[in-house]
Image (cartoon, rainbow over all chains, first blue to last red; front, side, top):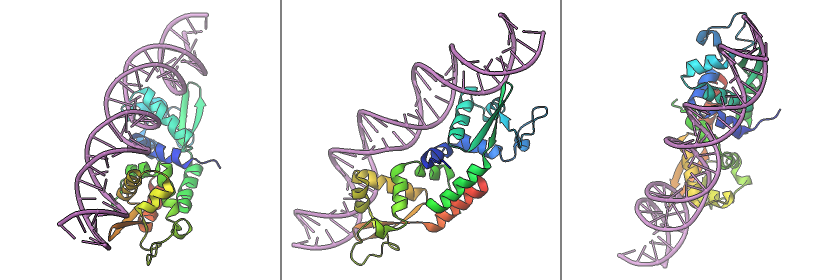
Length: 102
Length: 102
DNA sequence: TAATAATATCGAGAATTATCGATATGTCAA
DNA sequence: TTGACATATCGATAATTCTCGATATTATTA
């Protein structure tokens, strides 16, 4: 499994991005779901993050990209929405990597 | 235990600093000990890192500072030398923090 | 006490990151 | 096909980080 520790740590070195990961642990506590979307499985879309982050859509999108490239979140496009969820497998791997390698 | 996740992740977002942490896992494999110094317990001094990093003394000293402020390493001054070791307790805590909070 | 060695700190320029507004791209619905 | 959204990307500026050389500080020793 590919893993770029520095890219991962950089992705985690930002309050807003940590916030995103945190919100995604219990999305129903922080967001109102789209009709018929199970946020646990499908995720949360960019505009929902944009609103909650209180930053521009551009920034939200870029932060999500950074988290995704680092392997921390996964993306699924449905219609005009792009949903993001945590990649729990990968996050577990990173935890293991930290415990073994750092 | 007091912990500043962002500061920690920033400290880890640099190849040389990860290298330092790695070398300190098995210091005797990477450094020649000073007389009477048990590197496992006492540590490795700034000039030893400087040489191995192939960077200036200034940079090495600052990197060690960053790691220390993040809580990843501990310092002990003996005479004119400053020795650094991993703070294994704290590193374990950070691993646990990652697994529980991220 | 002076000279020397090890380390820490300061100030600066280059490189990277944060964040924005503007615009391009993709998708649905009329 | 056009209009309206949702998202992604581009270009720019401000802020932060990297890294250095120079210098200050601390400790040892002649």
